[in-house]
Image 1 (cartoon, protein in one colour):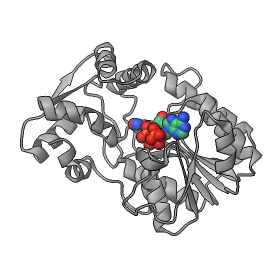
Image 2 (cartoon, helix red, strand yellow):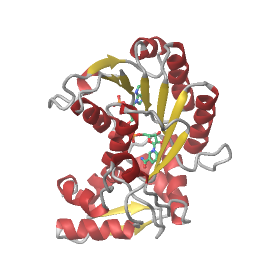
Image 3 (spheres, protein in one colour):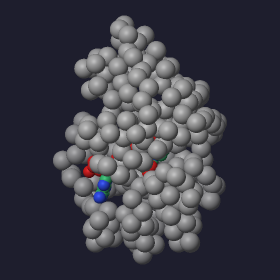
Image 4 (spheres, helix red, strand yellow):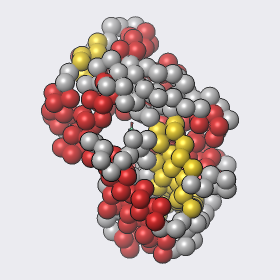
Length: 283
Ligand SMILES: NC(=O)c1ccc[n+]([C@@H]2O[C@H](COP(=O)([O-])OP(=O)(O)OC[C@H]3O[C@@H](n4cnc5c(N)ncnc54)[C@H](OP(=O)(O)O)[C@@H]3O)[C@@H](O)[C@H]2O)c1
């Protein structure tokens, strides 16, 4: 049995769908059962209602689980509670979504959090695999309302390149490892798209797909943080995001890897494919 947490999120929902499609025994941890897809894509999936902040619900969800696909908003106390529950319930292997630049002394709070969680996971004695995606293209949905209203978007990543990855490819890699974790123990895989891109490239692809000029407005990380807070993001998330975008401007995300093809047998999707598939979200 495989349990996927963060199952209603960008990576988790598609990973559950892919596991269900293979007919593998799969449970999805959700806070609210009504948020599970109603389109049949999770057919055969067991829904476990639970909350990272309520340990009793985690024990119930992890009972009988062999492999855990651990996805969360990366709050250390929450993921550590899931790992402790997994140890107690006899889980054998944890596949964790993490960050490639997760270090104890990272300037980005979220990355320090991932480093703490990774240390706890490694000390737990369970078999584990780490999957570290580069910047998700699906993050662009956050600026979709701004693009619709203003035909432009703000970003504080300057002209920094990043190995933009479609979260559907992260889901495919995660599902592949969770389906058969043998041989992936103690491995870290770096998940990227096939090309380095900038937000100017993103604006150009949106312009091409929409047939209308989409502007990329370069702002400072401080201005970006304020804009994200105004758009409703919680302050700590906006702070970490702005720090991460500032680092992209400095070249921090300019890395590529072949690990998607290694894990899934398929080339990762391009920026153009993402934009083409989702053009209606920006129109
Ligand atoms: N975005 C990027 O570019 C990027 C790059 C590298 C790594 N990552 C890592 O990817 C991970 C996030 O994955 P994602 O983008 O797929 O997540 P996401 O779309 O932000 O979704 C978060 C998921 O966590 C669930 N959740 C939140 N609080 C919960 C709680 N208290 N109890 C149970 N479930 C809870 C949410 O459920 P609800 O639907 O109920 O809210 C949702 O399913 C993070 O670890 C992040 O650091 C992201």
